[in-house]
Image (cartoon, rainbow, N blue to C red; front, side, top):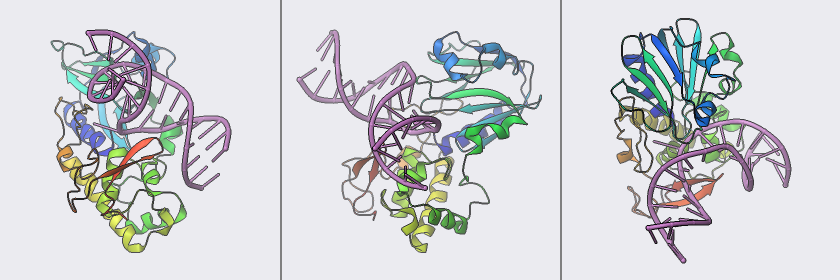
Length: 280
DNA sequence: GTTTAACCCTGCACGC
DNA sequence: TGCGTGCAGGGTTAAA
């Protein structure tokens, strides 16, 4: 799940679960459920801070979701590769790989499902949130007001790294993963191996616009749901941005702009898709 | 400073 | 049909 999917989830939660009070919090007994709450030694450390609490606000920091509780605590969730939240109720069967279930006093529940358990949940106090290492180092957010193109130009000039790696680096810019970084580079007409401090002003501007437009459009279409991956929203509905993908997952297929076959390359263990003609 | 490899998990497609 | 391999939208760490 990348920024657009996390943002869609944030908005859904804001509409649908904010204001509800947690009656019971359950962490399943499996080894992987414990892996999900790995920062807590015991289940109770996690569940006792949730039970009886009302959910008051949901914010996003990069790919992290922060659900604020009326106690001042914050429930932090990262979805990893396969994590998701699903709304349910007592009549809906618990899916395999469901690790946490919050049941609401008002009825219904919220489930955290994650087959690969790269995802994580933990509760911390609002005061301590600034001390969480992963959150401290999260870089500028593309949707933030302070993400302006002169700022971006400065940040790029400070580094001498290849663009694909840099866009994926959450300490450089937050929210982009393997899919959207490829889409952004295509939209900007830049190759994955361009070095950040050699971009012209015009290229920086193109890249800046590509980031904003790609992210905005993906949120509008409620995220990307690929055939083999199963991102769905809070209510189980897939996104629609997959129909807009220009390069990701299209190896060998003709570029939508120039008809050249889309190529792939391995960049830090991940497959990167690009058009050899349109990107330089 | 930047890049690479290994690792953390499960599920699925693919080739033999 | 069965089995091994590689790959998948995440991130960290140590070493080169």
